[in-house]
Each structure stands twice: as C-alpha cells, then as structure tokens.
Amino acid sequence: MSDDVTPRASTVRCPACGGPSRYAADNPWRPFCSQRCKLHDLGDWANERFRVEAQDADDPSPAPPVPHVPPH
Image (cartoon, rainbow, N blue to C red; front, side):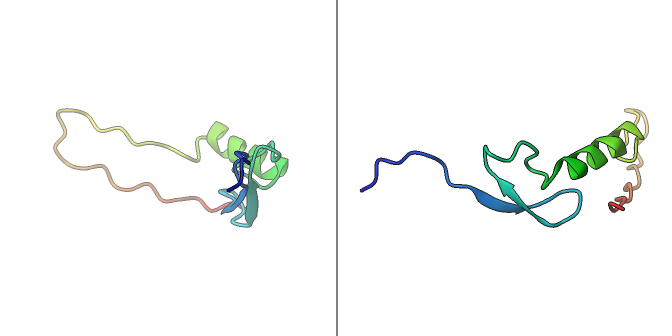
C-alpha cells in the first residue's frame, strides 16, 4: 500500500480547441491547454458570445436555445 496522496493528473478535452489538456496543478491554464485558449475563451465571454437567456416570469413560452459558437 502506498502512502502517496498526490492526486494524479488526468487529461481532459480543452473547452476552447478540443485538444488534450493536462488537468493538474502544474498546468496554470487548466482546464485549457494553453494561455492562448484561455484568453480566447475570455474574449468570447467579454464579447458576449456566451449568453444565458433570461425569461420573464410572466412569459409562459420557453426561450429558444442559444446556438453554440465554435472556437475559431
């Protein structure tokens, strides 16, 4: 039995480019694979490409889904 309690790194899909990303403490951009992907995602938020549609409490019709904008 090992006394090593260090969590193991895993590889996840980068939310920006879809490539592999090391999800561990030594990756300062996690869950992104690079600083470029992290800044690209931040730019999408700043330019309001990602939105959460609000619905008035008096409006019984559901809001249409917002299409996902793929990374460039």
